[in-house]
Image 1 (tube, rainbow, N blue to C red):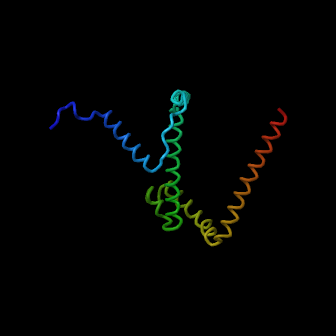
Image 2: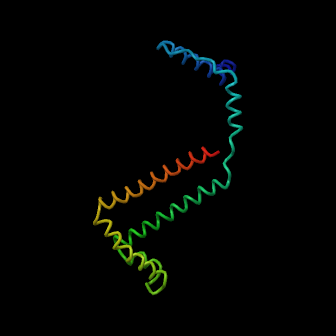
Image 3: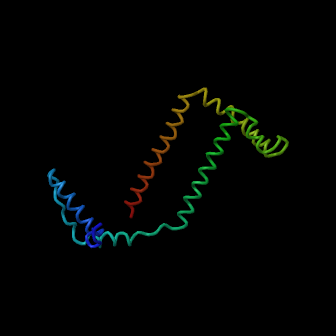
Length: 156
């Protein structure tokens, strides 16, 4: 074992590793390092200081949105189960069909069956028409918004 003074300190190890890396890169013709622009650290720190921390209300909105999306997905799953697999399945989760909630759920499921069957039998043509209507409506709204913005800017 050597003396304690002969061992490399972390700074010395870093310097020697960097020198070895530079020597290996120089063998392959890699470019030399360039000094960073003056005041880079100050500009970065000033940019970070101007950043506003996230507001607790925006975090709550994200959580609320996630919970609502999860609820919608659960409702879609129960609806698909009721319409495509077993009509009384979701209704039995809320009672023995003598209560109002389970009867209402069964009524909604049975009312949705013909609509879903219509969409499934019409197939791709119905889907294409729906996509065309939604896409055309969105495009119309975007054009209208742009024209209204341009006309309001022209008046000002």
